[in-house]
Image 1 (tube, rainbow, N blue to C red):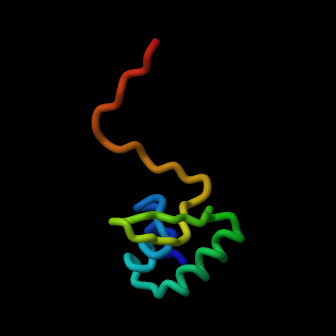
Image 2: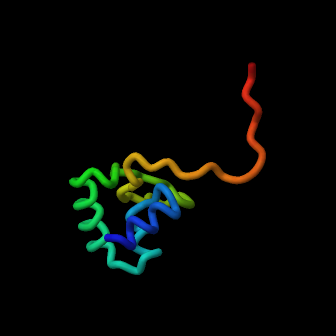
Length: 81
């Protein structure tokens, strides 16, 4: 489970299939771990349907609960007064 949490902290919001491919953990185990983490309140999950090149891709979209990633580098727009 620690590998999944570390990967999600580094990458942010990901599909369960993407997590499984990146961590080289079987998809069934990733889904089991994510369900356990969700019950504890460490991870937020929701069903997601994406269309990639016209092909339907369903999965669980996951992100770490209460975690805000650092701002990306580069210029930011100025606040209007």
